[in-house]
Length: 360
Image (tube, rainbow, N blue to C red):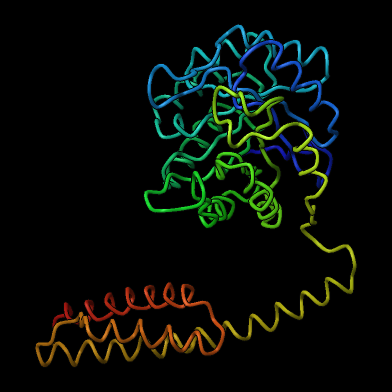
C-alpha cells in the first residue's frame, strides 16, 4: 500500500494535523463566522463541516446538502482554509469533488458497509484527492482495514485513518469507548498510515476532550479532529461535544506536543538502557511462562488419566481471588492482573484440551 506522509501534502515535518469546524454546516452565517475565527488559529490546517448528517432516526437535522458546499467554497476563498466533508455514497462524492472540496472523509456508519465504501472508491479512481477513513461504529478492525484497502486500491495515496472510538454496550463515561488497543493494532499493521484522533466523538462531552486529545498525542497519533461551533449551545447536532473557536485555541495552546524520537543523544542512550532492562525482564518472563505451560501439559495428562474435567470452577475462582490479592499487596493494578489471569487461563484450557484430545 502506497501512502504519502502528511508533511508531503498538508503539514510541516513532525507537525500534527489539526482539523476543526462544526459538526454540521447549518447556515452560511454560522459556517463563515466559525471559519473566520478558526482561521486565526495557526495550528488548524483543515476546516471540517458535515454537509450530509447520517442520523439514526428521521426528523433529526440531516444536513443542508449541496448548498453547504458553496459555503465551503467561500471558506476557501475568504480565509484560505482547506476544507473537508464526510461522504457516505457515490453521489455525495461526486458533488464534493465537483465543488472542489480539498479532502474527503468516510464516516463510521459508512465504513461498516463494504458496498458503500466500494461505490465511493469507484468514483475516486483516477482522482487525486486525500481521503480520511474513520473506524467503523463497532470494534471490527477488519472492516476498518477493508475500507482503507478499498480506497487505496482506487489509487488514493494521500490516505489517513481517523480513530473516533467504538460503540460500547456497557457503562462508560465516553460516548464511544476509545479502545486504544485497536487503533494501536491498526498502526502496527499499517505503520506508514497517518492515524488521527477524533476526541469529540470519543467523548461526547467537551469537558473530557482535553484528556483524550493529550492521550492521543502521547500515543504518537498524527493529529486531531475536533468539532468547533461559533455558538455550541444552539448547534443543531452534537451540541455537548463542540468547542467555541476560543476554547479550541486554548485547548491547542495547552496541549503538550511530544516528539517520537529524542534529539538529545544522552536522552537516547538512557532510553536504550531502559529498553535493555525491559528486554532482560521479558526474557525471564518468557521462560516462566514456558515453565507454567509445561505444568499445564502435565496436569492435562493427569486429568485425562483419571477422567477429571479440564475446567474446575472453584480452582478458577481461587486463582482470580488470590492473584488479585497478591497484586494489590505489591502495588499492581487489580484489573491488569485479572486480564493476565484470563489470558493465562484461556491458554491453559487450550493446552489441556490438546493433551486430552491427543491419541495414545
